[in-house]
Length: 449
Image (cartoon, rainbow, N blue to C red; front, side, top):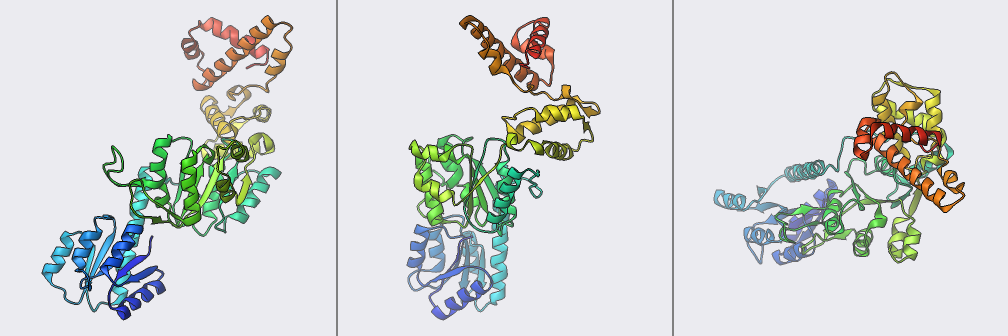
């Protein structure tokens, strides 16, 4: 939440209010003229404004009417020693949140402000729920006992209690989001929101709106104000996943948020302050992108204050039995898994990492009756397909073998998508059922399936 702006011309009373709010843990600042308040509103977002009705240069209600042109979301509280029903009604019609008659107890004001703050928090949380950005998660559990995963977890535990910007590096499907959530839950910000956004999944022309939000009328179709992810993450943590896919213009704006903790909505006229921790993640070599001129060097050094390498599954195969057990429990399955099936799992290199392992186990649970066996594990056997092609003696033979390998890959993918339904695979590939069976038999024999 931004500071409470107190607009009060009597310096002693205004300073007493500011000091009392600060003591209650509510940041506040004081201006003495309506004109000063207008300048503040032009430059930045104000969440709550405490307005004296009788100011030297403008009537308090007229000031609220003018300030509402800048920001309709600000919560206004009018203070006056000359309270009348007519003035209170006029203020309420204008959308003023409350009307306090002087003298009032400071405790009354603090309770009122805390209620507004709690309402704002609920409002932001509801937006997050609608955007599927805030889900119900337990504490993220990093599973494994390998040296590689232990080293990554130890680095995370050192970084989490600080406010340092963390850069998570690793292949797709390794669990970078899990690490980011764990970092948030182990930090002093754990009571705040965790907001994640995949920079590669949203088109550039929409991503800026998602990150920074927009004002009504900012562009065609902007029929209402939209809060961006940075605003929703205030007091919490934001994960910028696949940050290497950001274009250079957006990289410059992200750099500003990191340096100044401020940004502007699309079509906005004032800066919005945020108190957030940024965690970035990438499956790309960012240094190579810097050398190629596709990633800003200054942004790279800003986000890589604390880099953590999240290991791929092929680097920690000894963790596969633990991961399988964890996945079975997570899916509430009481099915066992045979030693032969475990051996098959550990004989595969898992290019899709933990995400691929989860999908494979989920399919196996559906197919298996009691115990998961090798036939239920729908993955390629440890491939020797490169040797298969390289052993060709002529170009014609190499071409034929390349075609066979491509066919095997397509058949394997179709079998995975249909949970092994060969009739459906034959229909999709437009071949007879008998032809498909012959191809499967042939490619299994040649170790391509």
